[in-house]
Image (cartoon, rainbow, N blue to C red; front, top):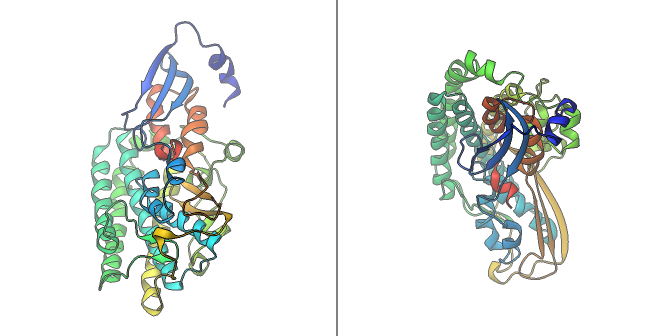
Length: 380
């Protein structure tokens, strides 16, 4: 929080008035509210107000069988649900000492990177709409839908795949699926120039995003910022590279960074990350035909499975940042405790409140969407 704003925040003038952004404002991915006090067109105080979406996931998970939670966790981040089920499965696998077959690990990476691409396309469209550019929004949603077609084909679900389970994945890829994935990556890559022309290099967007919502690296680290929002401050931290899981050690990809830490930099990082995800998917498509073996390890009857007592913490790099699951088993058929470390818990509360304070009303939605938060991660 900026020092020059302390006086205004702690002692707002009597003529300040309240303004509500949400809970239906399109400036964030989902029903989320931001209550601000403004003096003229300047925000002098901000308060994030969640609770408008699914709530209490962690306690709900403690009331369900281990296997039943696979259908629950994707709802914690609708635009990017795959990391939720992969990360939860990894945490259970650690406790139960289950080894995931190599082929299943490659398939999981394919699912995760397709989900990342779909999530970024969705974010680009929504972010463009905050500046009144609706064509990129329609493009982003339509192109994301083509990725969802692929999910429906190989998992059976367009949004909530429910494809992973402790030990691996549920079923084999359809015949000819990898060729269709490759074709889709060609299409997405061919669209990038159009997105550049209409959105990323658009003079209106650049002027609206540059210098808005500036987050310094020291502030980011202090508040627990991760993912593209951290990398936009110049720090190249990515769980896939710095604490590899699945088969990411075998893949060649860069970790894009920017230095400015503003809404413009955060957008450029995600644009570059989409290119890297395309690169990763192509490597997986090339490698998978030569990797045989089972898709999952045997587990006990999932409807009567007492996972051994123990605890674990698993983490992955979602499109929003570092996602972690801390899971505790008391040896029963349900988790004893579950805690979800969703990156949006920080980005949509402490960071958002800090960045909009001292800014202008018209930049609130711009800042909100540039942080790319999933509100259910806050209400978990």
